[in-house]
Amino acid sequence: MRRKTQVKTVKNHRFCPGRMAETAMGHPMVELMKTMKLTQKESMLLQDLKTSEEICIEKYNEYARKAEDQALADLFLTIKAKEEEHLNTINQLISGKVPMMGNGQNGQGSGGQPGDGQATKQSKSKADEYMLKDALDTEKHVSSVYDTCIFEFTDAGARSALNHIQKEEQEHGQMLYDYMAAHGMTA
Ligand SMILES: [Fe+2]
Ligand SMILES: [Fe+2]
Image (cartoon, rainbow, N blue to C red; front, side, top):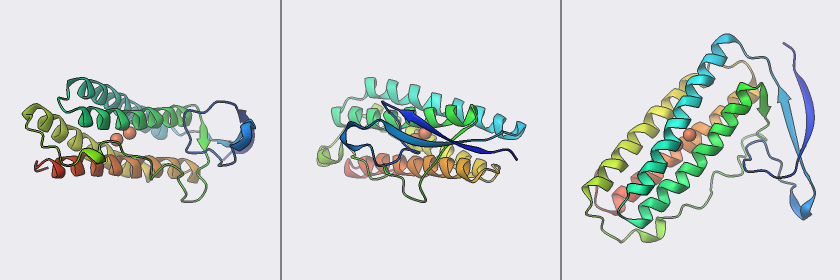
């Protein structure tokens, strides 16, 4: 298996799984990036994951537009931004680049979750409830797809990147569930 490590300089990041923390003081960021050779099966799985992430982005975008409760619209947009990061990671993997995750530390797992502050507002919208249920169902599905895919990858860095995404999909499910619980909806 041919692998090599290269050092890449990136000035303006929008996405960070492999990002090193030392970005401070305006220095160009140094990101370690491995390359890998994908098997045919890995390529196929990544294409499926890419489609899933694209669907998530579209869905959250549309749901944010339709949501009656502004806090819910904000929540959908927050999750959508994460899905865009996921898509970027998957595209990197497709091109054979493996972001290095820095053992178990995923720098962004505890990110802010707008919408929490609105927990007392009672949403009466059936349409909002439907979108939440559908989004939660989608997250469950996508999370299980990642779970399956992780086992199929030989490269430890790729597994780590997929694992990171899966953890965030679970967080999305939690965020949706928390909103529902706070608004008297059952998941
Ligand atoms: Fe995602
Ligand atoms: Fe998600």
